[in-house]
Length: 208
Image (cartoon, rainbow, N blue to C red; front, side, top):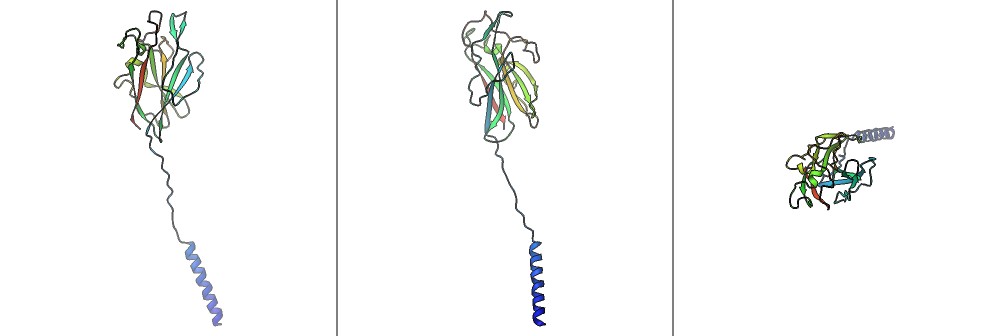
């Protein structure tokens, strides 16, 4: 009888011990870190000005190559084959950058050493907000001549959550299709001096 009682007590103690172990609670913290962006990533894509067909994008492009313009005999102006989109992203991590765009005149065959009647007056920048579903809308900055991108003229605000910013760069043709070319721009024509016109667009992250 004593042995049976000992066995019953041992069994009860084992059950109590297992019950106590089953009720023990512990926890593990799960953690993952996304690094902050460390720089800008510009993606340059040519888009056929007539068909709207996009070409091959590049994240290493250092130029926007309009190349030799095509003379439009109906309008007596020179037009580009492509315009270019510049998508603005980040490198080194996540984040939506706030960016300012400025322009500096370069080679100007019309008036060397000046910004008068150079590429800056004959090319445009259109500021676009791209939604997460790809829909594009012209931002409050609108469309400007490159030469007007000084000071805060090209300062983009923080885009809405999930969206990004894009700048479309093209040659001024006097287009009235929305967004219309700015009225203070001028086309390339046979009254211009032959040669290569250049300038520099600078994208500066004011915050990442």
